[in-house]
Image 1 (cartoon, rainbow, N blue to C red):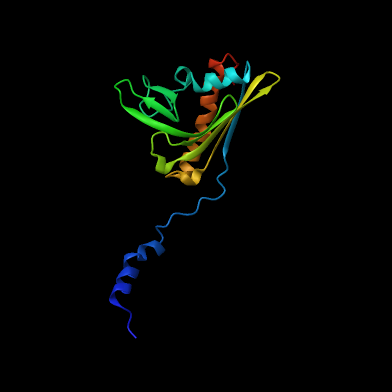
Image 2: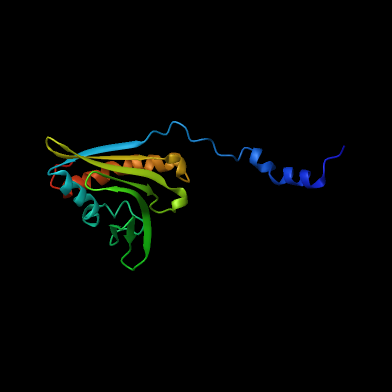
Length: 171
C-alpha cells in the first residue's frame, strides 16, 4: 500500500529536524554564584542595590546603551534608559521580598524569550550584609554557554562596584 502524498510531504517538511543542525542539549552549565559583603544592615544593602543602581552599575562596560544611560528598578521591571530616551528592559521581577531578596527573568540586550534566571539575596552577617547573586537558567539563553561565560566574568565587576558604592573595600 502506498503512503498518502500528504504524509510524504509532511515528512519532507520536517526532515531538517533530524539533521545535524539541532543544537546540543545544555547540560552541566552550573549557576554563576558571586557573593560580597557590604557594611550596614540588610535593609540599607537592599535599598542600595535596588534604589540606587544607577549610581554604581558599570554602564560603561555592562549595558545596552553605554555611558550616559540610566538603569533602575521600576515596578516589576529592571530598565535601562539611554540619554536620548531609548529604553531597554533588562529583566522582569517575578518575586520581590524586600529587604531579603528578589528574583527576575534576566535578559539585558535581548528579549524575554531568551531570558535567564537571576536571584539576589541579602542576609545579615557579622561585618554587615552578605549579598549573594545566583545567576542560572542558561538553557533559556540564545547562546547558553556564551551567556554564562560573559556573566561569570561580569558579575564580579558588578559586585565590586556595588561594594565600593556601599562604602566597602573592593577586591
